[in-house]
Length: 213
Length: 206
Image 1 (tube, one colour):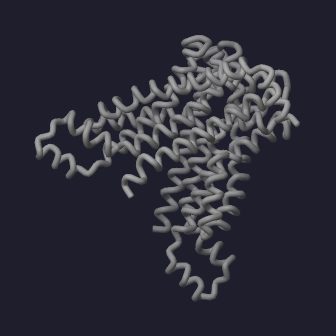
Image 2 (cartoon, rainbow over the protein chains, first blue to last red):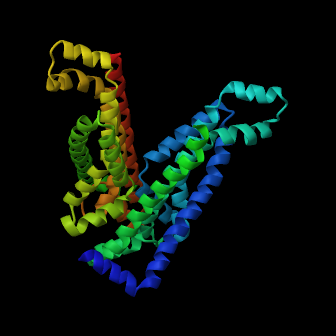
Image 3 (cartoon, each protein chain N blue to C red):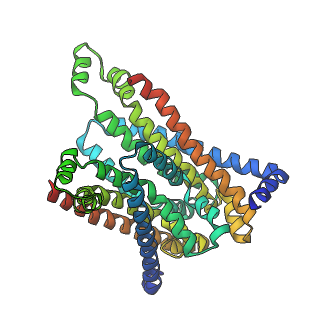
């Protein structure tokens, strides 16, 4: 059984496996966090200007047509090998879904609500923090969910540019044609992605559906 | 641009292989999606189960999916096609079902009144109404698969990814840009053509 071989490989190399898993998670979490810090403020910034929002959406859609592999590959000649170029590339993957969903969420707020808030004397910053962002939260969260799954998948490809992570076991497994090594990478990556998707979906329901129902 | 002008045949071959990977995998997925969609459109529980399963296939990262298939199917075109097909199932099945559910009950009743059997109703009424939705699904699936298919080069399935991987191995930025750029161009072209088809179809039924 190849799966048992894979398990026994992990059992005999626990430090190596833990290091790759940790690198994978760290790379994904840092990229997602930086992506959030760029995407949400940028959405708030371009929101008032029709031209700015239009340009941003156009640029983001153009970036989205570039395959993840090419984005990671492009980081290599510019930034070299390792985890830093991988994180930069993963941030490029994380920003588009969060940015687009934030823009949609922030824009589709009932204008009457904003009028009412202005009428009772709320300032723009207050309207942003107390009305716009809370109402846009479900949409923004949806973007974060898409971004998280994409970043975890993208981190698999970081192995090609020396970024480490669980993808290293897959590239080693293909190079050596060692099936059990292949599964040491593939099974945890698949479980990580599925777990993230299901976990975020459950969190989404908890945070937003029950409140509105 | 020193490499590309002298290697146009290689680039053309990679483009052709890429197109083949995309069309074969999306076509197979469409057959599965039509069967699953037609069967489950009016069976909410079965449809929920299909969405869950295809949703799981959709989130498994491409490289991991290919790696899981290698022990069974080896390297090359076959595991690449199976992996890419599994990606489109969610998008296509969902859109087939959305399309079939867009058939108003009045129309279905009218067809029943006219003595249409289930097969004739499906082919002559329901599927034509669902067509714009199916084309919309095809658009998203094709654009997604065009990007994912670059990774298939790593398991020797060919395509534009071979140029990107050569660029990584040789630290040759031009190859990365050509491979990535042509992939993006293919995605943009497919998106434009299919959005136009979708609009034309919606205009026809409206």
